[in-house]
Image (cartoon, rainbow, N blue to C red; front, side, top):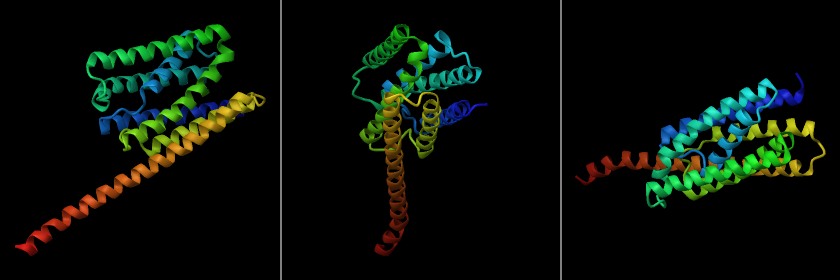
Length: 227
């Protein structure tokens, strides 16, 4: 087994862990674990490169099938929890219209790019472009919510390691690409920033919980002294 292939398999493992962690946290927190555009881009890429333009390498197309299945669950969770989390949608009709319009644009835009430039020339570039967009969207979602609902350090670390493995794997095969080099660095920078945001958010959550516990425990003493 070559080094790029081994790294590609590791990428699949860590991203699978990230997806499973997102699903678990979404169920636990009853919250969306992935932004709308990220869900639509992910499911579109996985459908196109699993069923329309599948890879010839078993380790890659099996990985893509697994990812498609897990992202389908994340998509269902978005439809279930999204209406509760994003109340700016005034009605269910507006919510579903926004979702399916973003999904359609994501899918057909990606599909036409593949037809225009070919599978081999587009799959990797589209994947890393999606990764960069996702990196920024996850940071925005975390900051706009002001909480780590649906997120965790496990998700952040798994995504960071998975993407790093993919970056090194592709770099070993295509070391001369300036665009891909830019994407590697940009994604890693944003993945690191996202991990820091998750860490700070988790710490604030623990601090608030600790303050609430101490406050609750001290209240009966104050009441007893006043009595």
